[in-house]
Length: 138
Image 1 (cartoon, rainbow, N blue to C red):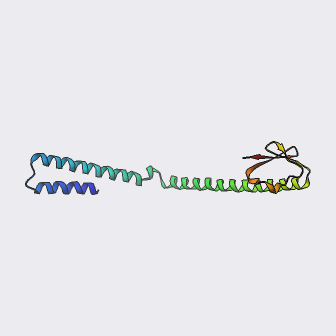
Image 2 (spheres, helix red, strand yellow):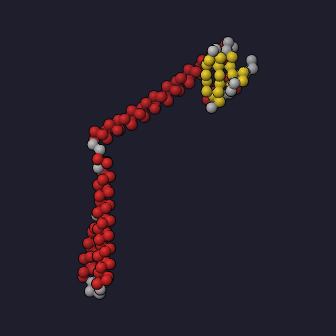
Image 3 (cartoon, rainbow, N blue to C red):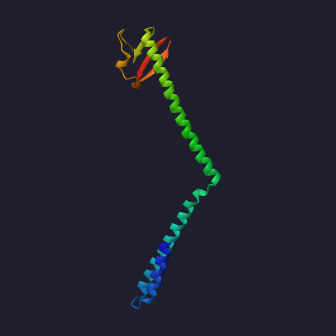
């Protein structure tokens, strides 16, 4: 709206200054029209942004709830993956301690004196298949 007010003041001042010729007055009027159009455009754009693209409050509430549910689902998935990983690591440690399972790292069998604490387990995906343990690098 400040552009509209500025344009109106510009035209008002131009009418009271006696040294303006017709050409200068036309330029001032054109500038004033541009200012008014710019102001109206800004007002229309701001009003359309305030209306949230025509969505009702129920739609906005539903979208917020959907986003919350998605976020909670992702948190639950991460928690489940962490719990699953902890179970896998416990099972791996039991099998390694018992010596009843063959362990392979990236497809290669480990030696009999393999120390599980000598590697960073978080760098490996753990798979169990046919009584064997496979540690696969990420």
